[in-house]
Length: 252
Ligand code: ADP
Ligand code: MG
Image (tube, rainbow, N blue to C red; front, side, top):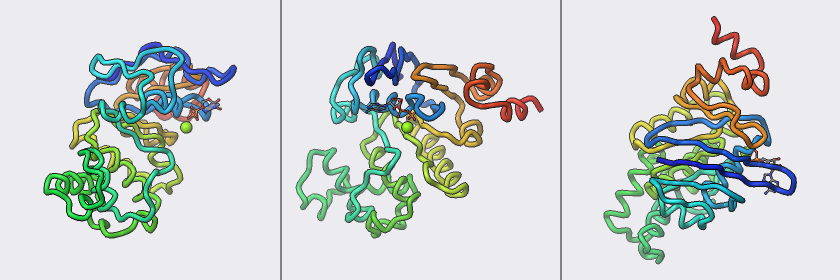
C-alpha cells in the first residue's frame, strides 16, 4: 500500500504540491488528472525522489521514503517512466533490457551483457514479452517508433520488478490509434503483473474508460478523488476542469 500523507513542495511562492494525502491500494490502477501546472509531475517527482518534499510522508508498506535518493526509492519498489522516454539510443531493445537486469543484479560488467546468465535472460525476455517488444529485440532504440520508445522506457522500469509503477503521460505526443494501443498495453500489464499503477493522462476519454480510480489535482491540491462516475458528477471538478461536456454525457 502506498500512503501519501501531507505531502508539500513549493517553488518560490508557488505551492506545486500542497498538503496532499492519498492512498493507493495494492494492485490498484489510478489516473491523476488536472490542468497544466496543477502539480501532477511534481507529485510524481516527489514520490520518486527526483525532488525532496518540504513536508510530508511517502509510506510504502509502512516505510517512509520521503527524502530518500531516487536509486534507493527504486530499490524499495517504486518504478517510473518519464514523459519523455529516457532510453539509450545506440543499444538494441534486448541489450537495453539485459543491461537493466545486470545492473539490478549487481553485475555491471559488459561481459555479463554479452554472455548473460539464464536468469538475466529470462527476466529481460519477460519484460520484452510483456510490453510486446520481443519481435523488435534487435532494433536499436533510436530507430524505434515514438510509441515503442515509450514502451521500452516502461519495460526498463518494469524489469526491476516494482510494486508501484508511475507513468507520467505515457500517451503524450501520440495519435489516437497509437494512444489506445499504449493504454491497452498498460492495462494488460497491470492485469498480468498485479502491481499498483498510477498514470498521468490528459485525454479524458482514456481516463474515464480505463481508470477505476481518479485523482484530480488543481493548484497543487486534491480537488477530488474517487471512481469515474463520482468525478464526472463532481461540481468542483466540472467547474475547474471538465466543463459541461462530460457531465452531459454522464447524465444521458
Ligand atoms: P503539471 O505536471 O500538472 O503540468 P508541474 O508539476 O510540472 O505541473 O508544475 C506545477 C507547478 O510547479 C507549476 O507552476 C510549475 O511552473 C512549477 N514547477 C514545477 N517544477 C518546477 C521547478 N523545478 N522549478 C520551479 N517551478 C517548478
Ligand atoms: Mg507534467
